[in-house]
Image (tube, rainbow, N blue to C red; front, side, top):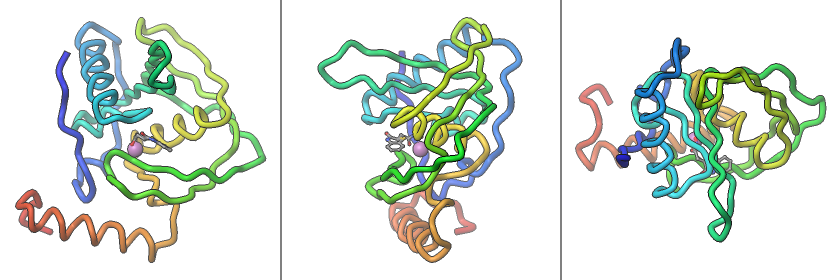
Length: 176
Ligand code: GNR
Ligand code: NI
């Protein structure tokens, strides 16, 4: 396994539409293992492939507590097939928007169809934190970040702060 580098805003790769995975092969499973290692080290509860620079529809999630056995979930080509009418607000964070947290409203429950680690079709019905996390990760696959759910004023403020940081650390592309 290998720990990968996590991209942060305003990296334009985080805005890409990710491609569907045709076949869940050993290469994809290796990537998912590397993503898990990266996520556990961060630490985080979910990670989308684009956060490590791979524009494929792949998500790993693990909501287990530190003192529990690990319970990784592997979602390939996840699609939301149903959401509840009721919404709820949850304070979200993102490894690609470090140390910024804010409240986002999303459907309270959702149902997601996806391929598992063996390429088998599965459906997952989620509520609570899992529902929040799954929706947050599927947003990543469509080039969306949780800050896109905030007011434009708040979003611009956050992006500006990270753009300045990137500029001074020499990480920013010349265009910024
Ligand atoms: O680790 C994470 N925690 C979190 C908390 C509330 C809502 C969503 C998340 S996902 C985040 C990891 C991440 O950035 N995944 O894309
Ligand atoms: Ni995120």
